[in-house]
View 1 (tube, rainbow, N blue to C red):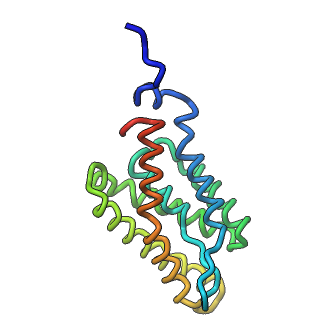
View 2 (view 1 turned 60 degrees about the horizontal axis):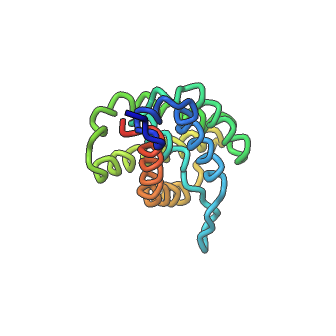
Amino acid sequence: MPRSAVPTPSDAAAMPWARLLPVATTAFALLLSIQPVHLAGYAALAPAFTLMTVYHWTIYRPDLLPPLILFAIGAIQDLISGETPGVTALLLLLTRPILLSVRRHFVGRPFPFVWAGFTLLTGGAMLFFWALQSLLAGQLIEFRSVIFRGVLTVSIFPVASFILGRSQRALMGVS
């Protein structure tokens, strides 16, 4: 029986370019993360798109987003955005083992459960980011923008999760 012209999910997962999807989407998220959203009366905010992709891929395909890639993407994001070098890289590197330790609780769960997990992660990440930036600055930095960035990130997550999930299923099959 001849093979179909449309690749099956198992065929797609075997394609080398499909295995680059986590790195490619995380690199794209880096570019989105440095584009600020302007809200009246507030400093420009940028949602943590990179955190969204790291969350998704660490839960569903951690083998395809290794720590070295996370470090490189975080370091590049810091350099491009003007952040203190290493802060985002450290945040992404710390996120990975935390998620790996609890990923079994998220795989195969309904979206609201996954979203709640992301909300907790984002809260912790934003608090860590604020504390580290305050420590490095030698003074407490404004917390309001960190809260708004966290809320913006959590609010946008369903759309990002949908896009990541659809691309994963289309190119790699269900895993």
